[in-house]
Structure formats: structure tokens, C-alpha cells
Image 1: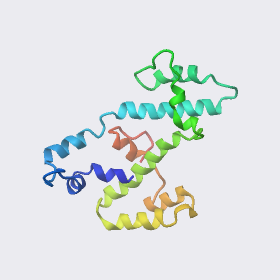
Image 2: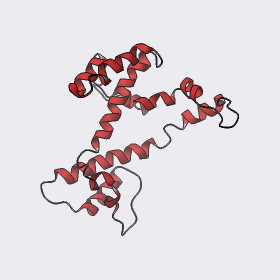
Image 3: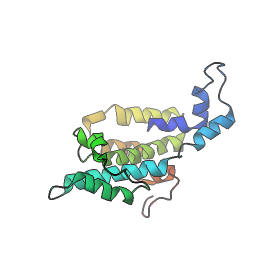
Image 4: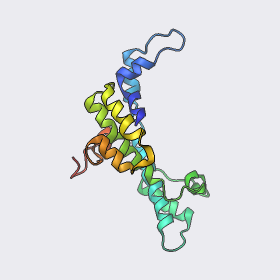
Length: 178
């Protein structure tokens, strides 16, 4: 959630400067930096969804799955490229090779939560201390003493939804999403 501040023009101007002269970034450069934010979103999110689907496929199968064949068969369903013949791309999928089985989908959910929580800052003012204090008091301070959904619901004043996530990607919200 915190990286969202870096894409706000005022914040970027505040913290960035030329390394030699110390002058702030020109407005034109700030606009170009922000315009590039979504440069590779299609490939990035396509890969994330692929990794989550592949991970869940191999960890929920009722019988053993051939990892390379499954990887190569699933990949084109999510991204517009393939792997070179003779490679074993799943071997480079460090999460499932390092014991993070069936958890990759959580990255997508983390982004949904992050964008929804940031929507409160957008609504109330990204530099307004009130949502910042509420974040500290309602999310960080209780930490693991309550279920995360309970903390986030309290912070947002409502259940989490994916509207801010879709808005961040420039997509319309799903039907039924507030």
C-alpha cells in the first residue's frame, strides 16, 4: 500500500531531485515517470495470475502432475509468449521450489487489500494525518492480535472490495462491486 504515495505527483516532486544540482524534477519528467507506471501491467498481472493458477493446479491435483508439461500447457492461456523448447521453467519458479506452496495467489489478494486501504487516503487526503493515524491505530498497533479482515474492515468502515484494485489498473469494477 505504501508504494502508492510514490505515484502521486506532489509526493514525487517532494522527494525527488537531480543528484548533482539538487533541483526538483521538472514537471514534464514527473508526468512521464507517472505515465510509465502501467507500462507492463498486462504482462505483469498475466504472469501473476498464471503463477497463482499453476501453483494451485499442481498443489490441488488429485494425482501427480507432470510439472513441465503442465507449465507449458497453461502459460499461453495467460500471457502472449512461450518458453524455449528444452527448458524447465518451473525450476526457476522459486516460490514453489522453496516451500511457498499454494501461496502465490496471496500476492494478488495483497494488492486488492493494499489498493482498497489506500482508497481511504485518496478519499480523505493522502497527506491528511487522520487516515494515517487510523492506519497506525487500527492496522499496525493491533497487528496479529485480531484477524486481518477485522482490522481492515474497521479501518475502511466496510468490508474489503476490489473496486480500487480494478480502478488502479484502469479497468471497470466487476459487476456487483461497490
